[in-house]
Image (cartoon, rainbow, N blue to C red):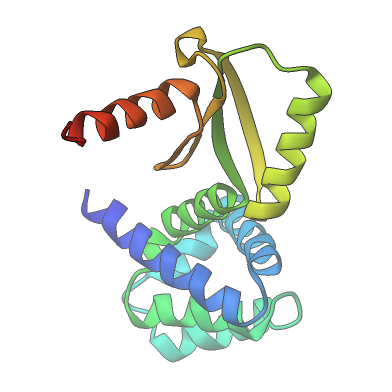
Length: 180
Protein backbone atom coordinates (compact mmCIF):
# COMPACT_ATOMS: atom_id res chain seq x y z
CA UNK A 1 0.00 0.00 0.00
CA UNK A 2 2.78 2.42 0.95
CA UNK A 3 4.60 1.76 -2.33
CA UNK A 4 1.40 2.34 -4.32
CA UNK A 5 0.96 5.75 -2.68
CA UNK A 6 4.60 6.65 -3.38
CA UNK A 7 4.32 5.51 -7.00
CA UNK A 8 1.08 7.44 -7.47
CA UNK A 9 2.49 10.69 -6.02
CA UNK A 10 5.70 10.60 -7.99
CA UNK A 11 3.95 9.57 -11.22
CA UNK A 12 1.38 12.36 -10.94
CA UNK A 13 4.08 14.90 -10.17
CA UNK A 14 6.21 13.64 -13.04
CA UNK A 15 3.37 13.87 -15.56
CA UNK A 16 2.56 17.41 -14.42
CA UNK A 17 6.24 18.33 -14.81
CA UNK A 18 6.47 16.70 -18.25
CA UNK A 19 3.33 18.52 -19.38
CA UNK A 20 4.98 21.84 -18.59
CA UNK A 21 8.34 20.95 -20.11
CA UNK A 22 9.00 18.37 -22.86
CA UNK A 23 5.46 16.99 -23.18
CA UNK A 24 3.92 13.81 -21.87
CA UNK A 25 4.33 11.83 -25.10
CA UNK A 26 8.10 12.31 -25.31
CA UNK A 27 8.55 11.91 -21.55
CA UNK A 28 6.62 8.64 -21.39
CA UNK A 29 8.58 7.24 -24.33
CA UNK A 30 11.81 8.00 -22.45
CA UNK A 31 10.41 6.41 -19.29
CA UNK A 32 9.55 3.24 -21.21
CA UNK A 33 13.10 3.08 -22.50
CA UNK A 34 14.49 3.52 -18.97
CA UNK A 35 12.18 0.78 -17.67
CA UNK A 36 13.43 -1.57 -20.40
CA UNK A 37 17.05 -0.72 -19.61
CA UNK A 38 16.51 -1.46 -15.91
CA UNK A 39 14.78 -4.76 -16.73
CA UNK A 40 17.44 -5.80 -19.23
CA UNK A 41 20.31 -4.88 -16.89
CA UNK A 42 19.22 -5.65 -13.29
CA UNK A 43 22.72 -4.94 -12.00
CA UNK A 44 22.29 -1.30 -13.10
CA UNK A 45 19.25 -0.90 -10.84
CA UNK A 46 21.17 -2.60 -8.04
CA UNK A 47 23.97 -0.08 -8.55
CA UNK A 48 21.53 2.85 -8.37
CA UNK A 49 19.90 1.53 -5.17
CA UNK A 50 23.13 0.51 -3.43
CA UNK A 51 23.55 2.55 -0.23
CA UNK A 52 27.35 2.14 -0.25
CA UNK A 53 27.73 4.06 -3.51
CA UNK A 54 27.70 7.82 -3.12
CA UNK A 55 24.98 9.98 -4.59
CA UNK A 56 27.55 11.84 -6.71
CA UNK A 57 28.84 8.58 -8.21
CA UNK A 58 25.28 7.66 -9.13
CA UNK A 59 24.69 11.10 -10.67
CA UNK A 60 27.89 10.81 -12.71
CA UNK A 61 26.89 7.35 -13.94
CA UNK A 62 23.43 8.55 -14.94
CA UNK A 63 25.00 11.44 -16.86
CA UNK A 64 27.40 9.11 -18.67
CA UNK A 65 24.80 6.46 -19.49
CA UNK A 66 21.76 8.60 -20.32
CA UNK A 67 23.05 12.07 -21.31
CA UNK A 68 23.02 11.40 -25.04
CA UNK A 69 19.76 9.39 -25.05
CA UNK A 70 17.37 11.34 -22.84
CA UNK A 71 16.19 14.85 -22.12
CA UNK A 72 17.52 16.85 -19.18
CA UNK A 73 14.06 16.63 -17.60
CA UNK A 74 14.15 12.84 -17.50
CA UNK A 75 17.71 12.85 -16.17
CA UNK A 76 16.70 15.36 -13.47
CA UNK A 77 13.84 13.07 -12.48
CA UNK A 78 16.22 10.12 -12.11
CA UNK A 79 18.57 12.22 -10.00
CA UNK A 80 15.69 13.34 -7.80
CA UNK A 81 14.72 9.69 -7.21
CA UNK A 82 18.31 8.99 -6.19
CA UNK A 83 18.37 12.00 -3.89
CA UNK A 84 15.05 11.01 -2.25
CA UNK A 85 16.16 7.37 -2.04
CA UNK A 86 13.22 6.24 -4.17
CA UNK A 87 15.11 4.37 -6.90
CA UNK A 88 13.72 1.05 -5.61
CA UNK A 89 10.25 2.23 -6.65
CA UNK A 90 11.25 3.51 -10.10
CA UNK A 91 9.60 0.66 -12.02
CA UNK A 92 6.34 1.12 -10.10
CA UNK A 93 6.48 4.89 -10.67
CA UNK A 94 7.06 4.45 -14.40
CA UNK A 95 4.29 1.85 -14.70
CA UNK A 96 1.88 4.13 -12.85
CA UNK A 97 2.85 7.12 -15.02
CA UNK A 98 2.25 5.10 -18.19
CA UNK A 99 -1.16 3.95 -16.92
CA UNK A 100 -2.08 7.52 -15.99
CA UNK A 101 -1.02 8.79 -19.39
CA UNK A 102 -3.15 6.17 -21.12
CA UNK A 103 -6.17 7.04 -18.98
CA UNK A 104 -5.73 10.71 -19.86
CA UNK A 105 -5.76 9.89 -23.56
CA UNK A 106 -8.97 7.86 -23.56
CA UNK A 107 -12.34 8.21 -21.91
CA UNK A 108 -15.27 5.86 -21.69
CA UNK A 109 -18.63 7.25 -22.77
CA UNK A 110 -21.92 5.38 -22.38
CA UNK A 111 -24.89 6.35 -24.51
CA UNK A 112 -28.38 5.09 -23.70
CA UNK A 113 -31.03 5.66 -26.31
CA UNK A 114 -34.72 4.91 -26.46
CA UNK A 115 -34.45 3.76 -30.08
CA UNK A 116 -31.71 2.13 -32.12
CA UNK A 117 -29.37 4.56 -33.88
CA UNK A 118 -27.81 4.10 -37.29
CA UNK A 119 -24.08 3.35 -37.41
CA UNK A 120 -23.15 6.55 -39.22
CA UNK A 121 -24.98 8.65 -36.59
CA UNK A 122 -23.09 6.85 -33.82
CA UNK A 123 -19.77 7.47 -35.59
CA UNK A 124 -20.64 11.14 -36.08
CA UNK A 125 -21.47 11.46 -32.37
CA UNK A 126 -18.22 9.72 -31.45
CA UNK A 127 -16.17 12.11 -33.63
CA UNK A 128 -17.90 15.13 -32.08
CA UNK A 129 -17.22 13.82 -28.57
CA UNK A 130 -13.55 13.21 -29.44
CA UNK A 131 -13.24 16.76 -30.75
CA UNK A 132 -15.04 18.27 -27.75
CA UNK A 133 -13.24 16.18 -25.10
CA UNK A 134 -9.87 16.16 -26.92
CA UNK A 135 -9.48 12.47 -26.06
CA UNK A 136 -10.03 9.13 -27.71
CA UNK A 137 -13.56 8.01 -26.91
CA UNK A 138 -14.55 4.44 -26.16
CA UNK A 139 -18.29 4.64 -26.87
CA UNK A 140 -20.76 2.01 -25.77
CA UNK A 141 -24.36 2.24 -26.90
CA UNK A 142 -27.21 0.67 -24.94
CA UNK A 143 -30.82 0.44 -25.99
CA UNK A 144 -33.15 1.58 -23.17
CA UNK A 145 -36.80 1.74 -24.28
CA UNK A 146 -37.87 2.93 -20.81
CA UNK A 147 -36.47 6.36 -21.74
CA UNK A 148 -39.46 6.73 -24.11
CA UNK A 149 -37.46 9.05 -26.41
CA UNK A 150 -34.16 10.92 -26.47
CA UNK A 151 -30.93 9.76 -24.87
CA UNK A 152 -28.73 9.77 -21.78
CA UNK A 153 -24.97 10.28 -21.95
CA UNK A 154 -22.52 9.24 -19.23
CA UNK A 155 -19.01 10.72 -19.45
CA UNK A 156 -16.93 9.72 -16.45
CA UNK A 157 -18.92 10.97 -13.47
CA UNK A 158 -21.00 13.40 -15.59
CA UNK A 159 -24.52 12.54 -16.60
CA UNK A 160 -26.50 14.35 -19.29
CA UNK A 161 -30.14 13.32 -19.44
CA UNK A 162 -31.98 14.36 -22.58
CA UNK A 163 -34.60 11.64 -22.37
CA UNK A 164 -38.32 12.19 -22.75
CA UNK A 165 -38.87 10.27 -19.53
CA UNK A 166 -36.71 12.80 -17.63
CA UNK A 167 -38.54 15.74 -19.24
CA UNK A 168 -41.91 14.27 -18.31
CA UNK A 169 -40.76 13.70 -14.72
CA UNK A 170 -39.55 17.30 -14.57
CA UNK A 171 -42.87 18.55 -15.94
CA UNK A 172 -44.80 16.44 -13.43
CA UNK A 173 -42.79 17.94 -10.55
CA UNK A 174 -43.39 21.49 -11.80
CA UNK A 175 -47.11 20.88 -12.22
CA UNK A 176 -47.39 19.38 -8.73
CA UNK A 177 -46.01 22.59 -7.20
CA UNK A 178 -48.63 24.81 -8.87
CA UNK A 179 -51.55 25.61 -6.59
CA UNK A 180 -54.92 25.71 -8.25
